[in-house]
Length: 227
View: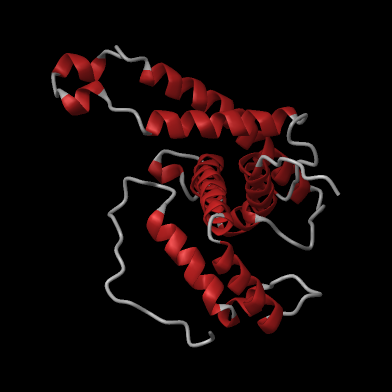
């Protein structure tokens, strides 16, 4: 079979987006490149990450004028992002509320189902916000924290393994020994693949998804007793 170039970054972005959206609202994008909503979410996430990394003029020079005047256009961009993401999130919440009213519940509840079941419509009035606003904010935080960062970490992890074939070989041997060749790794198997855990932790230490976090350093040498 001839070799083919694969854009792993793109595949990881699609995979992480589908996983987290499935958990949050119970849907899946079968063709991310053609689905308008999926493309909208990808664009929004990239815009948020870009804006979050920008230096705000008022933070660098705390002059009152810079606080109230949007010279850099960041406020305008954030307002556009909020408008775009609110349309998507509101449609998800509306669909779940409608399904709940007609009793059309899926056996496997997602995050929005869980939030609707544990919150009350009048519960947040005293705080000046609605139930829908709280749910949308929570969902947004989950997606934003989990989608792009996960895809970035997978990309770094795979690149490190490809550049260290001996480490990849040892990880494969551990999986074949502890889990088997004819099944996927499940959550119950994680405790048995200690070498794979070490690889993931080392990748997180070397290339954390959020590079502005406190630097990490190994404080002592360690050996894998499985080897």
